[in-house]
Image: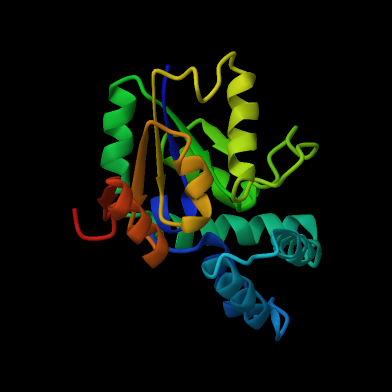
Length: 216
């Protein structure tokens, strides 16, 4: 079996889905005054490699809980349509189609929440999504972030009767140094529009470095 794993934010998407979500809510006057500042602080910690993921996830859950179910779903739908789908990295769809034509199984592995990502993932023709709050993964020892992504990927592959080590070939496409644990577990790690630290590591190790954000 050959499997290609893709990070979502700043990889398949040329932006951060959670930032776009907050901006979408803010434009509609549905965001607390300090929410954007709180999220900015989490993103600075993420970039520095010191993110408290549990605190970020609680912040996201708190934001969702501030809306009734119908309003939340309507806002998600409009955010996907107006902001997320237009932000898909221009060069990503062609690669996805090429890999799928070759019989490669595609997974998106993300620390973001599933409800916001799944419509975009499905629009790109991808069936497999491993997200921060995906069903049946809440009991795993670590969240789907950092080295926890390896645990969540192994859990998903185990359900299919395989493992990372058993794969004939595997790729992981990511922009972030926070994803180094999973990048180190695949046969073909690829740095996509990488942050400065990941770019240095990729160059030192001879990994592929690509950009998907320019015009096709």
